[in-house]
Image (cartoon, rainbow, N blue to C red; front, side):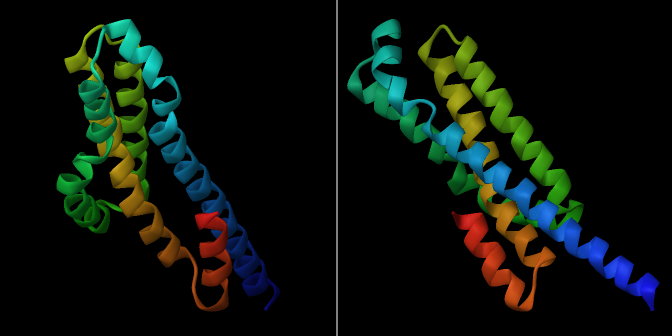
Length: 148
């Protein structure tokens, strides 16, 4: 009986560690989303962009969500949330690096689009993983922490 209680305690700890990881992933999404707006004026001045081009950079982050959301869910069902989550984080990092190292509008846009594709994948996978880790009364607490 003590062995079963030890396993249950270990699984409970794993759930809360998973929630912490998911929380950090969504925090990374927020940072990726909000990294450009505060410096958009500086980016526009540096590259000589118009306001329309600056708006394009903002919109390119969300645009991939239209295309990648459903396939991301299907891939997460097939390969698991962890694998797709890691790929999503890698895409967010790669997109941010491309944006940071860019010297032209097309490369800036490519970086934002790649980062956005990873971020939108992450927004599909993270709640799916949360629902699999938690149940009953704990799902409410976990959802509250996750969405904070």
